[in-house]
Length: 189
Ligand code: AMP
Image 1 (cartoon, rainbow, N blue to C red):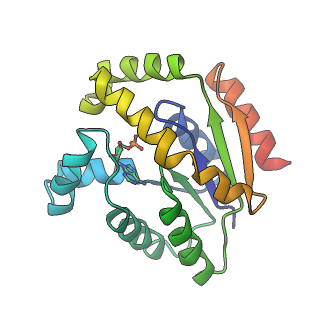
Image 2: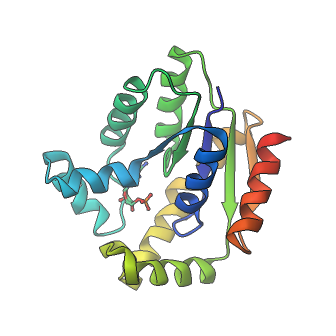
C-alpha cells in the first residue's frame, strides 16, 4: 500500500494536489477538514460541535478527529492506499494513526510536506474565500490564527515522521503543474 501524509500549512495546496495524486496513484482521499464540513452541512452533533473550533481557526479535539479517521479507514478495506490531507495535525494524532495502520500492517510510506511562504498562504486563502464559501477563508484574523496554530501545534508533526526517515519537504511555490511534478518525483523516487 501507498499511504501518504500530505502535509503543509493552510493554503499550501494540499486539497488541489491531493485531487491529482488520487487520480494518478488510485488512492483514497481522507481529508478531516472535508469530513468535518460535510458533518456540519448535515447538521450532525459532531459537525455542530466542530464548528465552534473551525470558526475560530482552532483545532477540533484529537479524540474527535481520530475517531472519524478510524471509521473511514475501516470502511474502505479494499483501498490501495490513502492520502491523509489535513491529518495528522498533532503528535497525538500521528501516534494514533501509526497505531491504526499497524493493525492493518500498512504503515505510512512517507510524509510530503508542502513549503509555502506566509504571505503567499494568506493571498491564496483570501482568494479561495471569495468563491469557496468557507467562512474560515474570509476573515483575515481567522486565517492568521490558523497559520499560528499550524506553526505551534501542527508543524512539530514533521519531527515525528523525520525520526522515522519518512519526511520529505517539497517546494510548494510555483504553478500547480510544477508542484504536482515535484510531488510525483518524490513518490516515485
Ligand atoms: P482544513 O480544511 O484542513 O483547512 O481544516 C479546516 C478546519 O477543520 C481546521 O481549521 C480545524 O478547525 C478543523 N480540522 C481539520 N482537520 C483537523 C485535524 N486533523 N485536527 C483538528 N482539527 C482539524
